[in-house]
Structures are given as structure tokens and as C-alpha cells.
Amino acid sequence: MSPAPTLTLNNGVQIPAIGLGTWPMNNSETADAVTAAADAGYRLFDTAENYENEVGVGEGIRRTGLPREDIFITSKFNKKWHSYDGAHRAFEASTARLGLEVIDLYLIHWPNPEQNGYPDAFRGLRALQQSGQVRAIGVSNFLPEHLQRLFDEGLTPQVNQTQLDPTHNRSDLRSLHRSRGILTEAWSPLGRDGGLLAEPVITAIAREHGRTASQVVLRWHTQNGIVPTPKSGNPQRQLENISIFDFELSSAELAALTALDVGAPLRFDAVDFGH
Figure 1 (cartoon, helix red, strand yellow):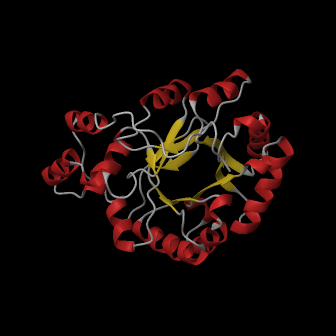
Figure 2: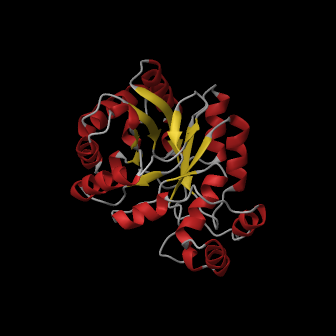
Figure 3: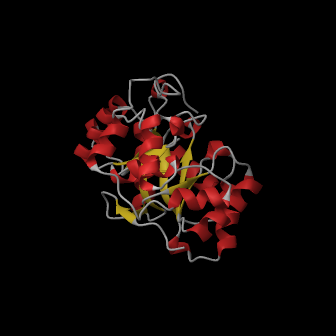
């Protein structure tokens, strides 16, 4: 299958419009999932130090036989590396596990504001980018106040990856992203425990288009300029999730999905939680 379309980050780097999430798969499961997903057209693969499956992502990529330049790898590092030098050491450890020399997108996984180290860690990321070892840099799970701290110090990420779905659509955060040219990436884009996919609004729209509820939700993401990273090790489900670029939701349908947000709390509080 043809690869997914791409979007352009604020530094000119192209990122696929949908990716494969890999948490909580182990290395063996991840390698198999990456190989199958590549056959379905995925080129963006999302991992993290904390997922403990970077080895599997690297193995899966090698199995595909695809040129390295056709693959887009995202990884993230933990709070113990929140310093300028720490970002470099985290990168060295991640690339060793991945078996790669370059990471396409490298993220600070959580802000951990009590440590007060993420601005220096981001400066370390910027140095890695300037040296060509990382193509794009960003953050994950950052709230507006954490981003503002970076802005105040003259630092702007290319990406902020965060929990996001129609019932947690993060409109204020996404508005801030747009004002600064930051791309929004979504983890848990289909919600949790299947509840979102049973929403009558979503199932009705799915019937109208002859699509699945998952496809409707993922299309909501992509039409809003959000890059979703749904996790699946099932080749059939992977293909279903990426087969969303041949139909469009109307403005009324997009609005109906967005209206599902009733202010439910996020799974984790980025002020107090982080690894």
C-alpha cells in the first residue's frame, strides 16, 4: 500500500500524517508490528525509552528492507536525563537500542516541572539537532505553562505529543500550538477501553460514510492537522487505521465530533506525573 501523506514541521522536515504507536508492546511484538505496519503503508513509528521496546522498533525497521530515509522514527527520553548533557546521553542510549545513527523526532517525554530541568534538556536537544543527529525536536505531555517557559527562553519545539481525542480535544493547547507553528501529535487517539468508539455520534457518521468508528475518529484527527499514533499489532487493524485518506468528514461532522468534549479529566496530570 502507498505510504501515508506527510505534513511539514516548522523547520521544514516532513512528518507522516499518521503513525504507529507501540506502547505497551514488548520488543518481539513491536518488531512484528513494525514490519506489518510498513507493509500497510506506515512510515512513522513511535517509541520511547520508557516503553522498553526501542530494540524492537529497530529490528522491525531492518526487517522491512526500506531505505532509512523513507522511515520516520520518534523516541522520547525520561526525566533522569533532564539536563543539557543528559539529553546527549539519552540520545546515545536510544540510538544504541534502535541500532540507528539518527533519530527523526526526539522528544522530552514529560515536563516534570518540579525538577526544573526541561529547558536545559531542550537546549541539549537543540544542539543534537544542530549537529544533524536529530532531524526534529519536541516535547510530550507539555501543558501551556510548560511551553510558555520554553518560549520565554527563546525555545520552540517542532512537536508536542499529548493525550488527545474528540472527548479530550485540547482546543486551548492546540490553539497555542497553531500560534507558534507547533505540530500537535496525539497519543491514545482512539480513547481508552473502547468507549469513545461506541459513541452514537461517531457510529452514525461511520454508517453514513461506510467506515468504521476508528476510521472516523482518526480522520477527525488528520483533518484537524493532528498526527495520530494509534497502537495495534494486528495487521488488519493497522490497515483499517491507515485507510482514511480517501474520504472526508464535512464541517458539520467535524464539529459534532469536537462537541463530544465535556471537560473530562486527562488520564495523567502533567504537573504531578512523569517519568
